[in-house]
Amino acid sequence: MEPEALLAEFDLLVVQQGEEPHEVAGASTRVIVDGGRGLSRARNIALREVDSEWIAFVDDDCVVESGFGRALVGELRSHPEAGWLSGHVSTGGAHNSDLPVVTTFGVEREAKRSGRWTLPGSIGFGVFFAVRREVAESLGGWDERLGPGVPEFPAADDMDFAYRFLRSGGVAVLSPRVRAVHQQWRTPRELVTLQGGYLRAWSAFAMKHLRSGDVAGGLWLWSWGVIDVLDMAKSALGHRSRLRCRLAAAKARGLLEGTAAGLRRTW
Image 1 (tube, rainbow, N blue to C red):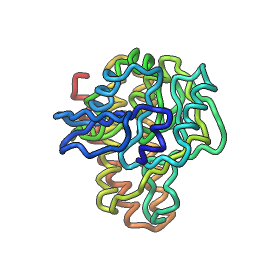
Image 2 (cartoon, rainbow, N blue to C red):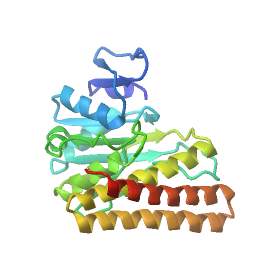
Image 3 (tube, helix red, strand yellow):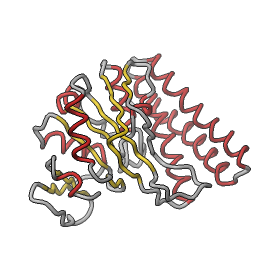
Image 4 (tube, rainbow, N blue to C red):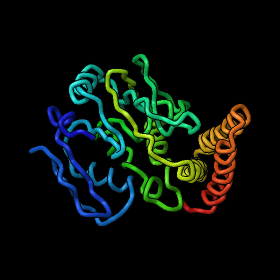
């Protein structure tokens, strides 16, 4: 991430986990060293540390484009009805066509989305989004049992938060003017592990809501996990790709393991 793209309009807070903090340029940059682990934990630390109206989260493998800060401020000011904002996230053109892309989000025209039956992934991913601080606080922040850094369920932290946001009546704005690039750096082997973890966490998060009393929502979310597995299997056949076959198998295994673990757990 390029700090100068943000610092013109924002204070920058870095939550550093697992190693010594790196130097980050800019007078308005603050680094918090956290001895714990987990992306959800880091986001909750940030939520407690700031008092701004909005918080924008950008992953450490996401590079914002020139003018990001000004565009984001302009969009936030233009949409007082919004509680969430996502922008256009691409691969930047550097990508192996045999590898499925990871958490990109194409936004060609401005849109608004809301309603409890809106698919959480249709409003964006954790790689980049902005949320009103009071909205995040009202939702209880991020579930620290989910997300990168959590061995059992290493994803779905963003989907769980987005689902709770939509279920609460929140309005999400998607803007093509706020732009970033999510670097695609994983090897095929790493991608297989990642996709299996995605489905394990997705199905567990679906079971979390089912076990918590939202039976219809939990089953609906789980069904999208099944669709994801079937889509990858179809893609593997269409591309005649061994890698995509491995991805489909990893997703199916993750779906089954996550469902079982999610049902066993007391949420």
